[in-house]
Image (cartoon, rainbow, N blue to C red; front, side):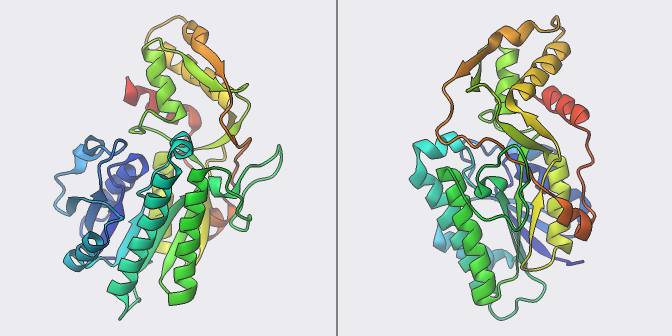
Length: 328
């Protein structure tokens, strides 16, 4: 098991990052955890307010694309590990602003890689650059099969293209410079603290406010839903026990059609609000499908189960109830 003294976590005020920060702070009280976040629209320090007074925690506001700033950060804190989560991540936004996604997701990652390489150049031992990515880099599945670590890349949106490019840069630094890296590609996350632009938190809030629930097309697109706290456990395992140079696919083993997820959210939210069953079904509206909308994602997570002993442990019913309650 790898041991670190000071870990940089980028995007730690965001959705997944805040859960990773909380886990690292509580599990490793003698390790310094530095949270770097620019606090753009999806970053919120309230997400980690409950652990912000931990003696091993430091928050730094900054931009991962700022070369001089990132260099000085490495000089100041002497990081021996990086957990890179900071990213623009909403597909719809990437369609409207592909250049912004390329700048943050590609150039930001490249800037961090360069800073790590230059700072660690005299000694790569006991160091790790961990890059967290998405299953969307693999493209779209048909009705059968699942993505694995060996699946060829086939990104279909500006978002997934930017993440694919950043993945390639991380692997290139491993092969070219021997930079100690690990990567993971995860399926769709859900849980408390997710910014309400994604399907689950947006629809929970719309149900609460009796606003329309805009479902793309017929709602038949399928996603493999991964509870964020289970993902944080996997990230912890990969950072500390993952093999350098390897990639791990992380999935929830929980494929659900979008329309069925909407029905579930309506049932749970209406029940918790004390409304009669089915009250919010009338809010569903079918809208024109997203450009290039991938039909199905699914991950075969057998490698991380086999090598690191990880499987998702939170039952979907329990997790979705906890998620809805967090927004009420």
